[in-house]
Length: 277
Image (tube, rainbow, N blue to C red; front, side):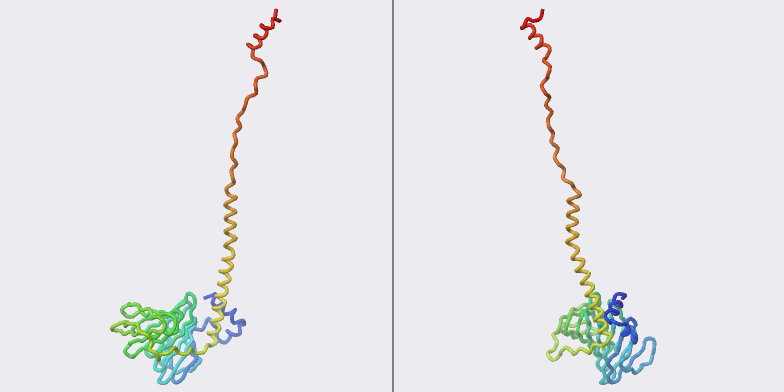
């Protein structure tokens, strides 16, 4: 959290960008409201009609009326579009995971992929785990849920705890009674929706994430550059740690010949010469 905040400040360039609406205080923002859009604030019992822009908090509900539409941006990379007659809840907003709930109606989502971050959606019939994806979920009044995946990957877990992995251009229907059905190809007429505009808060976060990724890449490159030098240092250390021992040469000691003639030899010489009286 601290590093993301610092990166946001660096990416913004000037503190004035945060004077009106600090990024750390931002949770979710309704930036498009066409027709009738209402909210039920957490802990209250009265629905209030709202207009864009409007800030939302954890556990706030949003409801769209007939022929209405709402678009939201949730901090940490989640962009949402609510179709007409949809009821939606922001359950959790955190650096590691955003979590929402669709009680009824249709929601389209654009989830920006980032390391260590996930997104989950709960409906009356299933829970969906998302990582960097464009998808659509539609919930009937009976709770039956239809998932349509356009890009990325999602895993849907039904009420029987059965997990189904979905690939792009696939559709899955889930009921509360029967659970997940067989994954089917998307009908040819179903196309990926157009992504909503990028708002100020999203731009700031994208810049902050770029700073984080660039910083990480530089740190990894610097660490990789130090590895060869460390290896050479270790090799030199091993060579100097064990000095080569020179072989010991043993030279035999040869005694010199005696310089004095033995006594017997002297006596014999005297007898031959006859010089002794």
